[in-house]
Length: 211
Image (cartoon, rainbow, N blue to C red):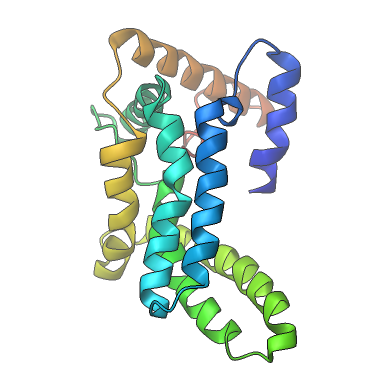
């Protein structure tokens, strides 16, 4: 996760003309509104389960705004199709099993457990307990995600993946144009070439990069 965010300054340095999604006013407004709404939900009298579901839905709002307000969703779909086709040897859909959106299900579960435990802490320690629960929930979700990828036919893994799959299907991916798919295929070829060179292999890499 840290590597993903550490990459952003490098992107800005190499492509100064590029506009990242969170630089758009609509996305910034969605982020501020989402944060404010989550605070209201957390302070409400709703049940813990209802709070977690609403908070999760509000938290993905800015991402949905970023994706649907530009051609980013189409390029996201193109990325999934390109990598999925490379990995499986046949044409794949725009939804991919390793997309980060599949963290949504595990995060709902681990956040609910973490916050339920944090509420039992003394009031003076509750803010620190909630912060620790948030970090723990994220760490546990990443581990659950890894398990889901390795056991994708398991009923529990499929249930945990369902919220993320629906998020992909309805909001954060779109069917790409042939031109967008060509860009994704060229990017994949370059990633494989760089990975092969780094491993001292002149042939193709065994596995494509994570989506």
